[in-house]
Amino acid sequence: MQRAVVLSWHVDYWDYLGWKDPFGSPAYSQRQTRYAKALALKQRWTPMLLVDNRPVRGRKQIDAAVKKAQEKKARVGAKITVALKDGKVVAKLNLRWLAEKAGKLGKNVVVQPVLYVREASTKCTAGECKGRTLKEFFAVVAAPKALAPTDAFAKGATATWPAPKGVDAKNLGVAFLLEDSVTMKTIGCWWSPIGK
Image (cartoon, rainbow, N blue to C red; front, side, top):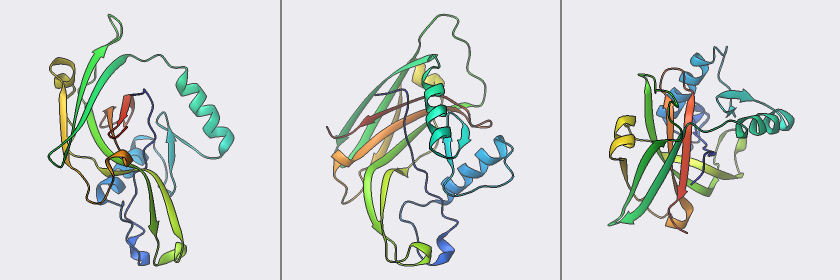
């Protein structure tokens, strides 16, 4: 359970090339569009890497952004509990302020639960990667409707997903993002593997 998480939100707008990305989703393409709008970017691109809500390119820029993000003090702490019960992944997030007068959350802040697969291989059958086996890491497989942060601070916010068929529980993880749904700024993020 950490304060930083890597997530890969696969877009679906390349499906027209003839191969449908099994992790791609229109919702994730829309999420990227919201980032582009919030950051006043002229266009979306693939891959689009964001570190601490800022687009980065190149190893030096990425390393510098990660280092700077790690220096920030956390405002919110969390505890995640995750269980696999009756074919369902059940995760609960409890939040707490780390200091008095740490500030208030804006009206657009939500808790976004995410279920992801830690590692996968997919065979590409068309498009520019035709014939290649793609190695995927931290691919989001489900991101249901966002939850109210007030619940997470008071009694805990719970998210439930059907366990993906054919995926070993040890290869799954859950993340919770505390983010502003308009500016797309992340206030906190926490993750936990499902299988140890």
